Length: 81
Image (tube, rainbow, N blue to C red):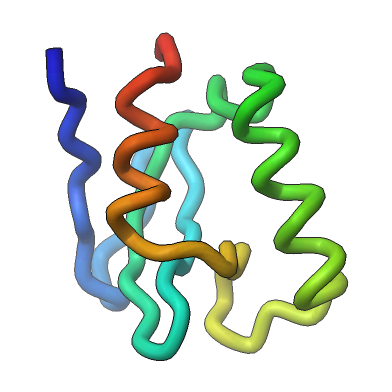
């Protein structure tokens, strides 16, 4: 079963229980994902990789994750909410 994450414009507010991440290698796309993903080991591994590459400076206003959008969508489709 595929799990589709909503993409929300930069001006839209983030619903309670969610947070914004920016994903992509050269051009970043913004996704709003459930906070519950923070409890998932696969997602925490992805965040550790993002920390190694970007540190804690996230100029886009949300967490930047350095992977392809396809990889991100594949990973998040395997996570339970």
